Length: 276
Length: 275
Image (cartoon, rainbow over all chains, first blue to last red):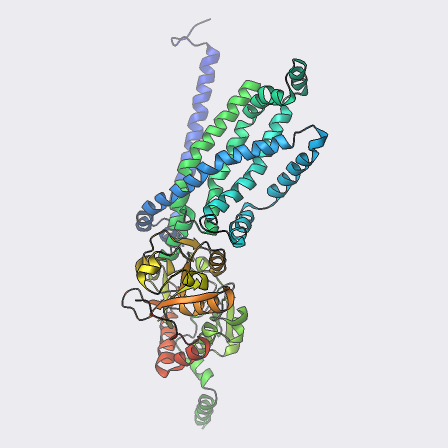
């Protein structure tokens, strides 16, 4: 058998050619599509007006700095909500897993809680809690929309997060619990040292998706007062009669969400490799 | 002979039905969405006292009455006025519009003029500070120093936002909301002390909507900087603008506009002016 100068077998060389060929095809078809969009869209009769309304450079420059600083409000709300959601979500998941009959009400509570908060749109919860509870007559600063908006987000998201944790807990085989109990661990210790460490690791990719969703839903707090990026973009839109600020806000969101999405995908594929 | 008869008939028609004669020769002919009809947009919902009971067809309410007056001046009978609902966002989006002009307290600004056309102003609004008796009892006064220290709110989609920053420049960042209802909910919940509205809206909200609502004061309409003037919004480059402007000019010169204002917008002189 003749060995090529590169030191590859004929099979490897063939596969390499095939790979290159498909890369070239993929690259050129993508380029063609992009070229078609770039060339054809501006030919549409309304393009100039659309461009002026959505991709206006002047408005972009005018609104960008303020939108960026308004985005910090979103980041802050996200930063304090995420850990609270994780803690409450885990607590609800554990409540749904109690096996002691005396504690059945806790289990029932967990069930009703997840049903209710997964069933109601986030924005409604934000409205009801954000205006409703302060309306009871709480003094300042306890009626702040930041506090009650956060409460609304935490309540809703922890219901989803709890279900994901629960699926993780249930994915750990019952024999592991039995084994832990037979080794003399108490049932809470077997949960803490045997089940949870495995369960949490298994659901991290799924929880990353919740994290990405939360990053965007933080903007819903704008409904009850806080001037975060979505609201600030709305103010610019109203004053300048132009939608470009929304495009700017979308771009700022993408800068944050795309890396997290990539990370989540990476974690999922890593997990799939480990399982197969 | 025939032509004389025709002329006489025409003259008679003009004398008896001045409205129809206007429609034939008036500048609006052929420039509306639908020939012979004038399509006017308002908000959804449309608020008191601009439109009463959310029913612009009734001609009740300031903007509704002005709309019918403009239509009559342009040669459209009341039957030929068609109402549609259209929000601000729909009005500024590129593309065809579903109205000839849109009246819902749109403030005329230079930046907006770049994207849409505005008619001549049909109303100049004072801005007023809506608050509650509780805030006044706690020591809020109608002067700038006192206003600065309040916690402010406003409707995010209005020019009240820049006016608030320019006129008052509050010490803490204002909270902004989607609409009047949300602003009043926040006042009621004590999340904000005060909110800036155009005077007629503020009068209505304080009297009807907000429990213990009161007006702390007004920034007069004729201030030299940032006067808040409402205009009818039209598509950029609308051929109808000249006709609408002409109609509004006639209405304001004849005093008809002031009459409509007097019958629908309450007496506003009782509200103290902020110094």
